[in-house]
Image (cartoon, rainbow, N blue to C red):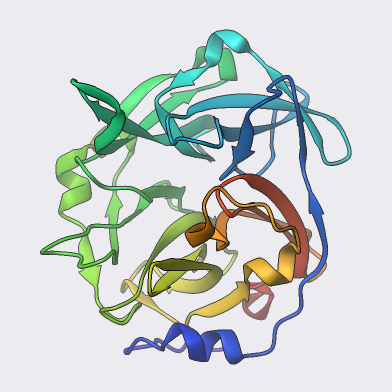
Length: 313
């Protein structure tokens, strides 16, 4: 299929109206953290002969989270491991690989010194290492920016997706830049990324959650698109493809919404009921993929979907 750039945003309601196929939604079970929720997970990844997953762990009544590493011990079951590698005050973990190294990231929250329950700022941290016990701090992103994601391209350079807000990004837009290597990853280079207004309407927002380098040189991106109705938030899983040579992307597609994946009534707060926060996908190589996602800020689920990038194989 020919890559066709999209130059104007499409309302999320219109994206949701397009047909999609989602099946086999199943909750993930987490052992060793009883009394806590685990959500906004990374995709499963292999290391040292085992399958792992990073998850956001917190009490239902607050957002003061930690990130734990979980080893897969059965189908859809993950057990907390490596307690010495508990990441305090970290949220929404993600994992990729660059140059044979694991890159694990998450959003570090900063609380008010006189009110530890009130979050006043945040920043994305990146850790790297050949194995999980070897992980050490690599870089710190700009203040108040989430959803920064990396991908090693075929030529060894690093594609970086950003999500500024405020004067430059409104409610949350997507930026893109290419770095020569991990040594160039820092707050300044992240802030310099070109921001594209053609992804979202001004009253909507979104970000990148995971990136897949495709065989044809394009980048397959899985992320989220969101909007509000009254005080309620609505997050959907979406995907698009980007040409790193030009920074242009094709049209966004909603690949799943909360109701497609889970019918449980569980939620952290009523305004978060319709939230599906994308972790990423595992591509099967047969035209299908498994989507991993957080549900309503309190659970983690997986579901089967068509591979959103099969069209470019």
